[in-house]
Image (cartoon, rainbow, N blue to C red):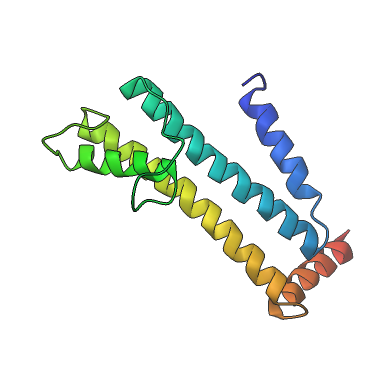
Length: 141
């Protein structure tokens, strides 16, 4: 990554500050969901490269819908102290990695839930509340 943490954060703040209407927020949340989902996939790739020396599978295994889910399942085996160490020998590292993957997945799902609610609630309380906050902000300036 060529940009600093500060530059990255500032770019995200500028993107968020451009949300003036609910549809802007819907688009921003779509970006959040895409980013967090991509980070989860990237973490799965990094884990397999770092600990197994192989790339994450391109195709999911039977029963799991995405390759990153296979990596997460392997981490569960490792953190449970399975006799067959799959990826990570240290159970604490396996727990932390799996937790990170779950948080990224949950963030993507949460952003998508809010997007769906905003899209569905045309003229409802969520949009009314956003409009009220915007009106208050404009009145205070």
